[in-house]
Amino acid sequence: MSRFERVRERLRRAYESGRQSVRAGRRTAADVPEPARVASPSSPGPAAPPTATVVGAEPPAALHGSTASRDDADVPHALRIAAAWSWRLIVVGVVFWALLKLVSTISIVIIPLAVAMLLSALLAPAVGWLLRARLPRSLATAVVLVAGLAAVIATLTLVVNEFIKGVPELAAKSTQGLQQIQDWLKTGPLHLSDNDLDRYLTELQQWVNNNTERFTSGALSTATTLAEVLTGTVLVLFATFFFLRDGNLIWRFLVRLLPVAARWKVDDAGRASWATLVAYVRATVLVAFIDAVGIGIFLVIFDVPFAFPLAALVFLGAFIPIVGATLSGGVAVLVALVDSGPVTALIILGVVIGVQQVEGHILQPLIMGRAVAIHPLAVIIGLAAGVVLAGITGAVVAVPVIAVLNTAVRRLAARTVPDTPPDAVVVASRAP
Image (cartoon, rainbow, N blue to C red):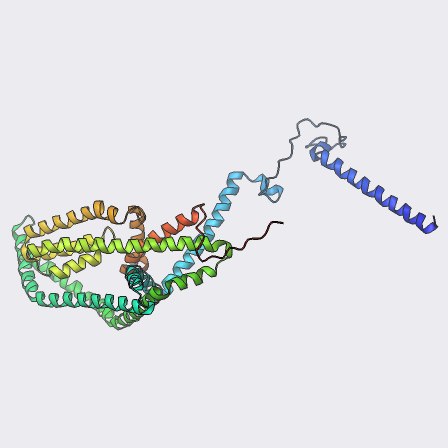
């Protein structure tokens, strides 16, 4: 063996010996805990041998998998959980607030799109019938949209014409009703004198004069409001047409923007939500129609003026659950009171209450079913939030949004795997 080879062999042996000594030191340090090397935690002293047992020394706290340091381990577990929940809730709240600000900023676009979505859910079955009759998709969508628009215009024309015809008679009877009210205030339990009535009327006139500027400013902004309404109407028509014609293509495009692992589950939740929206809108229209027909028949029987406009008002008010039909029915009761007296008004009030009871206990559970059933507390909270955010339109849109979100969250939280789409291509690898 040459000298160079002997030197290389010695270096290799020295390196192996050093590695073994380092490994032995690490095993010794791991076997002996750190507190066992201290004689006393309060007074200094010589280090205890590795095999010594220190009396009164606490074993070190084991680090949890979620803690990054000894400081985290010293914090109580409940406090760590509360802090983790707190900052996550703060982040969610900030994101929700930002979304509300965004929606309020572009509400002139969001509200027409929401209305177009509701109209699409209402008219989608009719488009499906025409497609099954071999009509092209664009032609079927145009026919349904034009027919629906013509029905709305015809209904509004009838309502306006009947209202114009009945206004003079109702105005005369309103004057008689006010005179009867004044006589009741004088001879009734209040026993008001002419001076008291004149004083109250003077205060009312003064209040109107003081608020004339507010009324005028509102009238001056009518042009801007009219422009916004026209813009929103045009947007609703265009959006409804394209939702009906290309809704499936638009949804598939949006789903493709998501990660591949989430596409099937989101697609399943979205289609289930759309089915819920269609069922909700169709059921609401049917219930509103039954309410309007039921109240309208009694208005015609008791010869209450504006029977058709009041029935149309009940139909529109029924789209706001719980409170809509009641408020619109209250208008019918007031008209009956002015025109026909308190007896007829009480009868109409009983009819309105009876129709509401039939709607709440028979029609809605039977027609809507459990698929779109929503707790009344959620309905009330949704209505309040919708009114605050977008007024009457928000009240109309709030409950359908809650129904859709309810279905979507349930489907996303379900642990079942959605069915494989019929047009899906499954690529399988061969076993090695």
